[in-house]
Image 1 (cartoon, helix red, strand yellow):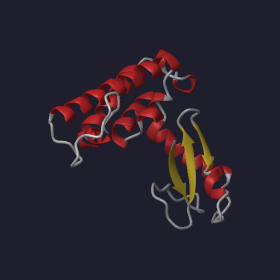
Image 2 (cartoon, rainbow, N blue to C red):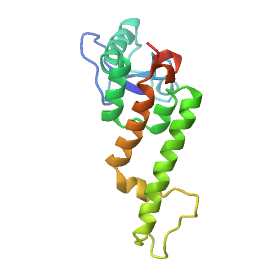
Image 3 (cartoon, one colour):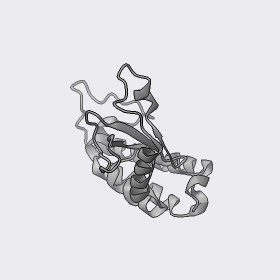
Image 4 (cartoon, rainbow, N blue to C red):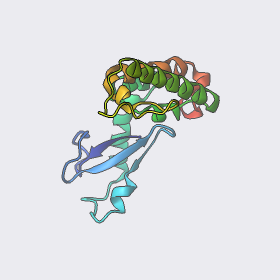
Length: 169
């Protein structure tokens, strides 16, 4: 799920950050559909205005510009930091399982490398149990980890037959 914000004047461009007087439009990557953020509508804070079809069209045009094609989505994934689960959900079930398995093996390798340094995060020693993954190791890897899981996803997503139906063309 990605989002943008629209203002009451549909002639103004969309915004990427929440600001007073704006309405959030969500784009579901699984369905490629835009909608008003229902969570905000149901909250104690009323919408500053009622979005129209024009507002949705403006947001949809924006989403089409940044993730309108599979290639654009792959580029966006590299730049944006979409989670591995968001990316996994865009793959067919058998490829999703393969992808998450590869991510788990990479996370395990990061954990083992962290353990091998023999420099535990906690004074009392490493808190990890054998089959667990160390969050500290993943956080320490930072951009390397993100680039790795996105790259693994791209290697699968580049083949249209590996994608969920909404992203086949």
